[in-house]
Amino acid sequence: MVDEVILLDYWPIMFCMRVSIALAKKGLQYESREADMWDKIPTLIHNGKPVCESLIAVQYIDEIWSAKAPLLPSDPHERAQARLWAEFVDKKIFEDSAWIWRGIDVEASKKRLIESLKVLEAELGDKACFGGNKLGLVDIALVTFYSCIEAECSSLVAWGRRCVQENESVAKSLPDSHKIYQHVMEMRRNKFSLE
Amino acid sequence: MVDEVILLDYWPIMFCMRVSIALAKKGLQYESREADMWDKIPTLIHNGKPVCESLIAVQYIDEIWSAKAPLLPSDPHERAQARLWAEFVDKKIFEDSAWIWRGIDVEASKKRLIESLKVLEAELGDKACFGGNKLGLVDIALVTFYSCIEAECSSLVAWGRRCVQENESVAKSLPDSHKIYQHVMEMRRNKFSLE
Image (cartoon, rainbow over the protein chains, first blue to last red):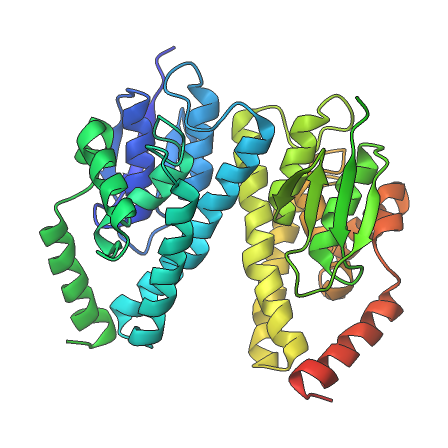
């Protein structure tokens, strides 16, 4: 049986990009269906069965198509660490970025964001990727925030550039940053009445 | 080599109870070390290596000691669903319970809490446990909120009672609800100046 893979997708949403990157790393053909951004997205539908939440979907993809391009380490302790750092990205980086672009408590949020990025930078150390030499769960979680990474975090900036340049799956899944910027500005105006 | 398992624990914290239940289900001997509640808890230390975050630690325990009492389903889709519901518990049930006991926005939080419990009740359906017939990740995530489950959710109340009565691991890991109540009241007074 040929697998039927559908992604309920909405291009500016970084959680959707994560699933796109994972599918591309595995070399999978899939149908991208545009959903409304207030729908439950991303939803991966594999042979009719839905899987929600981006990090859960990335793990699912890795478990189902385990033979090619592993996204989680095989060692249980390293796997737990990867899950922890991916959660850190969701809790810390996502939250403060969201405050900033909504224009709430901007200066303090920016300070916290930089602190969290510094923590991630220390964790990256001199590795090429968070996943060692190959793109993994943490890289996929964080690379979708590439455009938010501050110039002050120079080794993270270099990591982001490497992720994009060395992984076609990433380059193809991240939309043009100018297009994202325009979308965010439109959202700020229309949904939050901000200029 | 005999495994050395240490749990940095603080008895009233439900996230710690989750790890205790998982360790008990696997029949593991471990040393419980009392940590301060503002420390990074729970932390499981297995042969010197730390694993933080309760749901990540439960999955780690299940992966390392996979032969006895599996806590996650073997099917990848069911595993993804279990992770999703466990996250639902953390995001929805935890958040609203926290508002309630801090005395913030109590009525609205209570309403949302009951709505979320109803969603979980529908997911439980007529199964004995969220994990089917056996206690699994979602049961472990939710049973630590047992004392918050509202009387209006009668089949969840029955589920909680079953979890406690049929699983020694749960009964031993959940502290006396009167003791928890006293602790919460003390916290409200000392940390949040509430009566």
